[in-house]
Amino acid sequence: MDSGVAKLGSSLLVPCVQELAKGPLVKVPPRYVRTDEEPPILSDTNSLPQVPVTDMQKLFSEEFKDLELEQLQRACKEWGFFQLINHEVSTLLVENVKLEIQEFFNLPMEEKKKFWQKPDDIEGFGQAFVVCEEQKLNWGDMFYMVTLPTYLRKPHLFPKLPLSLRFFLLISFNN
Image 1 (cartoon, helix red, strand yellow):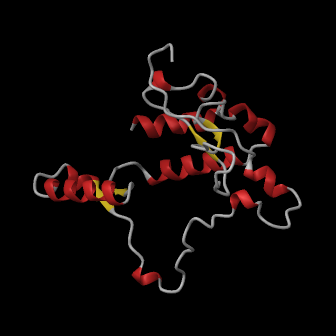
Image 2 (cartoon, one colour):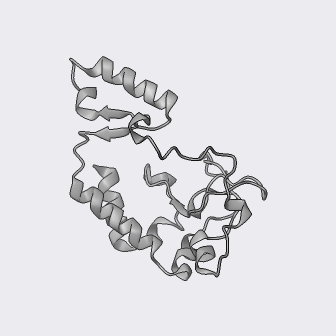
């Protein structure tokens, strides 16, 4: 890139799942049938592994910091994600952001097209990391956008978001 900013990746453009689902579907299109994954275990939910939990307060505690950092490192290596608790972000803010995001996905398709991914980019509305036409896809749409640092924001995405969603994103990422 000319700006010297590292590119996060790229993705081929694929149809919007919400639009596919509106049509008269007799069955799920083959591209969305995931035979490459094991079916979920539904019978014995007590023996399922639990998502690792990281306690933010313990990370700042002299007494528990080392143990919590070990658990965090293990969660990142073994799971690739974790649940963060005691982060001091208000429940109300989290719920408001969730509602705003739901409203975004409920926008008419013509509005969502303003956020459509551009060729060779992963940011925007669509699916990320689609690298070939034969690739199996998830039955769901996503919206991916870098918000911070501000100089990495895509000028065609953030300013077009509904004002209330921009407000909550700025509050949540600046806390």
